[in-house]
Image (cartoon, rainbow, N blue to C red; front, side, top):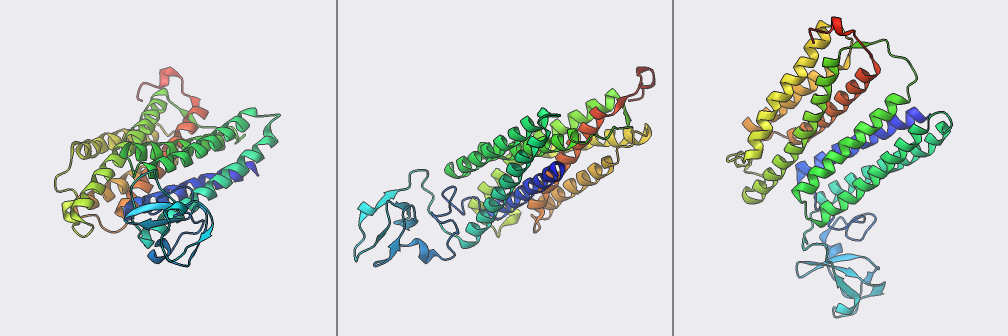
Length: 345
């Protein structure tokens, strides 16, 4: 039951990553300018008229409306009169972003729903972990750590909104999501009591560890490139996709060049695994994901960002990290080959 809850939690976190990728692709990051509610609602508005002041209208405490291109919050529950009364309202002071786009709002809202779902899944997992308190306290502590990281991730999400999508905070937000993925995979691995019959070399272990670290760096660089593209979209608009990377910055070239190193390191893993017959089956999945990742990157640069390629690029990178980390766990669980037989790798 516990292992099943870990798998559900892992799927839920990946759903959040997918939803977040769609948010980034559609530019919906500020679809809900407040947090955790959306314009003060638990279920967000669908029409701009719901965010405007109206005479003779019932307002609830905490409701957010737009007045003179600024967000204001209702101080109490009241019915408006014929004239607007400032005493019922307080200016929203987290930021000065005050725009409404129904599509962006609901895309961001769905992202938050998936976040709440992942939180519930990890909470259930943490509760179930107490069944292992006597025989494996480590599972309980790690489950609590994953719950703490998810709460921290939710707080980070709020700071991303309050900062109006600060690039560095978006990067940290993404890296923490991958750390949660890695932690859940680790919990899944150590809760499996089956003994491994695999054999591995120290060289293979070292290279897969390097591959995991490189993937984290590459994702961090990718979020910075994405921020550059967002800035270009503000200048040229969504329809001028051919201009988004017409004059790329240094981070883009670093990200693109780094992909060559990522491919070489992971291909080395594939080659060693095949030549030495270590039997890590997921290495093939890893190489497939790398090829797909490179393909989506090429498509974005040379074919002006075809539909869904941005979201797929991020999701594939997240899946790649997860598989690499699982292989890393498998390698540390496997038996080491004697040094005398280990020269080739």
